[in-house]
Length: 497
Image (tube, rainbow, N blue to C red; front, side):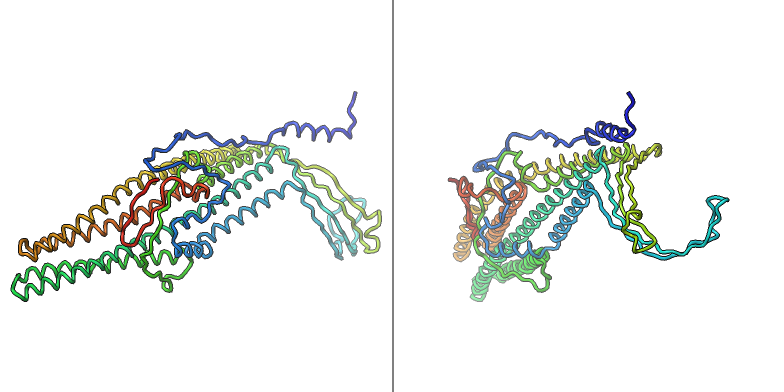
C-alpha cells in the first residue's frame, strides 16, 4: 500500500530522530587516577574529613592576627586580579546563557512601510507582457521564527562546553582568591619575621654599644690596647649595616602588600609589631581529598569536560543541519487593507544543509578538538601530581622546621652562656677580647637564625593550607596538635596532646 504524500515529511523527521538517538562525540567521563592511599607524615599529624561543599572560609583567621585579618578583607575587596577573575566568571556565565538560548526558537518581528516606483524598462519576464512604470505603497508586518532542530547534538554539546567553561571560571575565581590570600599572608609573615629580626639586631646593637663602652673604659685606664676598642667598633659598625639591609627588605614586602590590597604603595604603611602569632594545627586527609578541595584541580577537570564537549561540536559538523523557519504576516499596498484576509502570507518549511566536500576541514576540526582534549587531560594529571607534591613537601617541611627550630632555641641558650663566660674571663684578664666579639657574633647569628626559622614555619603553614585547598571543618579544631603561640622574642615550642 502506498503511503500518503502528506506523511512523507513526518517519516523523514522520525528517521532523522532515530539516527540522532545519541549526541555527536563521546560522553564525558572523569578519568581515573592512581593515587596513594595515604600521606607519609610524621607525628603529630592527624586525619581530617574535608567536604568540598563546605566553604573554604577565612583560613587566615586561624593565625590569630587581627591586622592580617583586616588586610585580607581589604585585599578581597580591592585586589584587581580578583576583580579580573570575577569579570571572567560573569563573561563565562553570559556565554552559557548565549549557548543555552540556541535550544529555544528565535522569534522576530519585522515591519516595512514604503512608497516606490518600479521602472518600466526593467527586464521582461514575458515578451508578450510589456512592463509599465508603477508607483505604489508597500506595507508589511511579519512574524518570523527560526529554530535549529538539534538532531545530531551540536547545540547540546555547545551548551555542555559552555557550562563546563562557566564552572571552570568559577573554580578559577576560587583559585585566584586562594592564591591571593596565601600570597598576602606570606608577605605579611615575611614582614613580621623581619620585624622580629630587626628587634634582635637592635638588641644586639645595644649590647655591643655597652661592650664598646667597657672596652673604651679599660683602654683609657691602660688595662687593654686600642685593638680591643677597634675590634668592638668594627663589630658594631657591621651590625648597624644590617639595620638598613633588613629595613629595605621589609619595605619591599610592605609595598607588595599594598599592591595586593589595591592601595598605592607610597601611601601605605604597616607599623612594626612583635605581637604573638598563633601557629595553627593543620589536619590532613587522604590524598583523594585534595582532588575535592583544590580549585585549580577543579578548574583543570572542568577544562577537560569542556574540551570533550568540543569534540562533539566538531563531530556534529559531519551531519546535516536542519532549520525550521516558519513565518506569518500581512502585506498590502494600502494601509486600510493591511489586515484583510487577502493580505495574509505565510510559509512553513525545513531547510537542510550538508557539506559534500570540504578538503578535509571537518576532519581537521575533529582532530584539533581531540588534541585539545588530550592536552586538557595531561594538564589535569599534571595539576594533580603537583598537588600531591606540594602537600607532601608541606608535611615534611613543617616537620623538619619544627626540629630545626628546637635546635635553634637550644643554640641561643648555649650562645648566651658562652658570651657570659667570655665576658667574665675577659674582665679577669684570662682571655683576649676577640673571644668576647666572637661570642657576641655567635649569639646574634643564633637569634637571627631562630627568627628566620620561625618565619619559615609560618610560611610553610600557609603553603600547606594552600596545598590542601583552604580551610577545614570547624568541628576538627582543637583536636590533635595544639596551636602554638609564636612570640615576638622567639619563644616558640612544639607541643603534642
